[in-house]
Every structure is written in structure tokens, then in C-alpha cells.
Length: 175
Image (cartoon, rainbow, N blue to C red; front, side):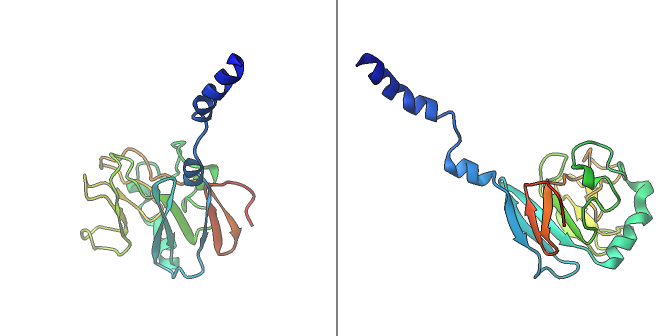
């Protein structure tokens, strides 16, 4: 009888080692339909309690990415904080869609999407600006030299389920 009682007493303790259903759901991959996202627009979704930005880049935005690479701290994304498919100029699987965790790599502030040239100053090429300490990132989330942020914005794991549906939080074979 004592052994059975001990077993029942231990059950809540042992079950506390396992994540709750709420915690499991928070870490689950999310599916995002991109069919309504217009070129140049940004949408923010939440994954694992973090903001994830999805930007549908225009042809002009993509063409402009090569013009400022000498001003970037890590233009080839060699710092290993992103998936292998982010180690290119576009930092994405499909160049049209940029998917980033929207948290500054300096102190965790939330940068602003400022895609238009010359909106921040006369040399601004467009990208992301962190108002907390002045870090700037291009339209691929690559950090500029001379700002507090040490590395590029993080690319989360993701894969395309179809041409216009992405699953964030899951890597795998894409289209």
C-alpha cells in the first residue's frame, strides 16, 4: 500500500517535468498564407513568442541589395546564427520573400520597417531601423557597419509548403 501511495504522490512531480500543452503549442510551427501580401508590404506573425516579419520584396528592392554590400558588416551571412539557406544575398529560400525574427541583435528592441530610400537620411538605402540605439539593417536584414548591432537579423527555420504558403518553425524539403 505504501508503494502505491508513493507512486500517486510522485505522479504530479514527474508530470511537471513535461511541458504543458500551452507550452507545446507556443513552440509549434505556424502556417502563414502569403497570397494577400502585396509587393513591398510587410506582415508580422508570432512564433515562439517572437515577432516574425515576412516582407514581399519588389524587383527594385532585390536589385538594390547588391549596391551597398561594402557598407555591411557580414554581407555573406557567415556568422552561423541562421539556416544554411540564408547564406546568400537575399537571405531567403525564395528571394521574393524575406522572413526574419523582428528583434534587434543588439539589445532586443523592435526595429522599424523603412523600405523607402532616403526616409531616414539622404544616404538611407531602405531597410530596417532600430530606434533604441540606431542600428540599421538592409532589406535582407544584414547589419550595416558602425552600428551597435553585432550581427545580422536572425532568420528562423522555415519551409514553403506551396508557392504562397510558408511554415515557420520547420525546416525541410521545399517546393
